[in-house]
Image 1 (cartoon, rainbow, N blue to C red):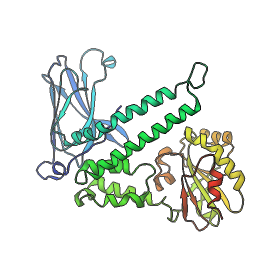
Image 2 (spheres, helix red, strand yellow):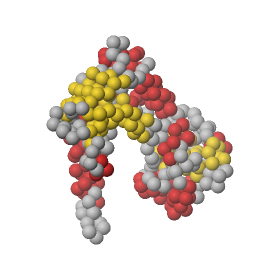
Image 3 (tube, rainbow, N blue to C red):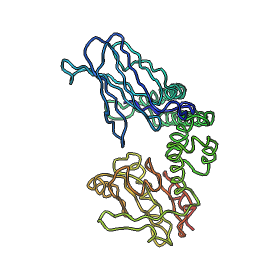
Length: 375
């Protein structure tokens, strides 16, 4: 299902005159009996909250929102074999305004009118879509394997393709950043800032100044408060910050406390058994550990696994003889949430005084990178 981010200009969002929405669907060529359903995203899951009959091709939903929300409107037949009926739904941004969805006999391709949020989101996505299509084309072409199991293109060709993809990703990041900078008085700009400027590896000291350029109304909105919280969490993994202490159980179920290693350099490595890039990086981490282990250096791996069996099997398979901890809560691992980790692999290097001195050190020369910091 396509994920669409909601956006909204300040005027309709904060205007006191419009505190509710009226959503009207019109399917001009729909003849068979049907019902319309609306679903909201709650706690990461879609939940249908209301339904209504489609009469003469028309249906209406009414309600109110605290802030714009991503919703799904689906239309399903009420006669015949509904289990085999083709899925017909539309994912878009709902806000407190009068919105119409106009189509022929399907809601999936309906035109959306009256949602400033959707209009601004479409503006941003239109600039990104061609770049995304180029990335997909490169991945499909150069990631293709032959019948024998090998790659059809040489390592050098695949590296060049990878470099091209990296440049396209950087261009997409720049588009999102510029969009935020040019929409400082709109909900769309703040949303782009929250999702794309505050990406999985943002540096809080570099990006926080932009946040304070948004209007006071936006900064005090629910999204604004969530954004500020995200920045504050990001500061916990910033170089120069005092590492936030934590306690989590090791693979034997015994509590381990980070501060118990005070006096050593500690590489806190966030990973998971199901993470392919993590598993590919593990040999470099093993090599570094074997070269540097002792009184001055230790590694603590925080796993974002959900199953203990898979976690322990990966530790043994990859030969990682250092400290391992996990609460087996997947992406809701409490240490990962504490440090704002929403992608893996990631790591932070802590000095003997408990201060973060580097982060995201990796690659074949990991040992040499660590030696620059370990005195």
